[in-house]
Image (cartoon, rainbow, N blue to C red):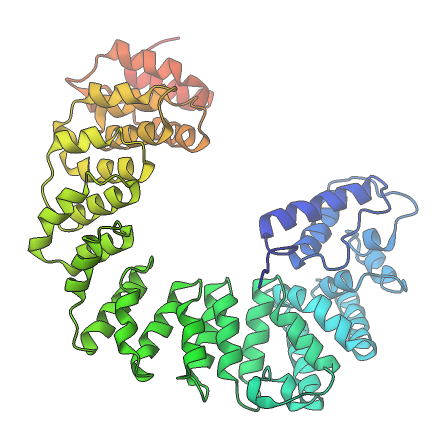
Length: 491
């Protein structure tokens, strides 16, 4: 069930709303959010028009209803509510307006629209009503929409409130309320899905375990998936094989963990070993518990998985390290030289978890590993030893032509070392091609106090002054002058 689409990216939607508002202010008749636009599009659209109007920008003449509904002057907004083609989304926004005449007229119009076209209005405006409900005057529209949905449910067939399962038998044609619920449950808006799930699961009737498990397995939002999972586990038939198989195959770790835990109640505890190498630590912990409850030894399973001639999974290596037995240290050391990069990284992480000693020379060599995860783990393992590392060796790896992951690992260690070596590295990277590295370097330069005493014995004032001049563009004139004064530099 793919829910990616309009309304799934709030930042992008807000930018779209602002761009449409600017287009409408410039006279483009088509620059109004289309049907199905996400709530963040409408909110950004209305706010952009209101703010540009406050800024003195002139409205086109004649102004379309969408512009007048967002006008800075209340009497213009109130008059625009009489337009027959006023977008219902903008009318909904005005139900939270600060001006009481505008707010009251907008609320009356929303009530009439809901009464005349309940299904289309509920589906189109509920996500927006959920956003508006967080405003100071937003409780009214949220209560209205929730109450309307509940009344629609009471008037509909009982199958509306809980999705019918295989045992429900053939159902008649979906009624308006049934279509509304299904539409909200499949909405691209995360908050709308959560709202619909809570309504559905607190209504009359019983949830169908299989239907809830299907929803939980396909849901990309963890909070919404948790609601479906809890409902599936509490419903009759939660121990059925089909329900558990759906949960254990879900994309979200908490859902898979619930399915793994349910294996014991279903008499399938022996299957716990198959989940010991799950990519989620939470699921692995549940699988270890399940294996122990069945009288098995998870540690022995892990050793068998790691020594598999076909090659170990990196998650099996991580699981072995999580068991925390001393005899596994040498096995993890041997895996540091494994041909697969993810396995090498997992072995390094496991040794670090166990606080096992690895020679500095081995870790330094792994900074140049072709696998980014290995270089990262090697740099993390070297952090406690950073004061005894050769800073020149690390500085050599900052070159712009070097692999990005190697440069970032070396930079991490030089920043951890501090002092003049960290400052030199940061100044060298303030114009780096990689945005994140560049911003990290600039933040480090700005955070430096530039007191000579801070670098006593490491650098003289002349070098500090030269580094400051190279990074002068990062400071305002006043801040730059303060730092020059600290160094005794006059310009």
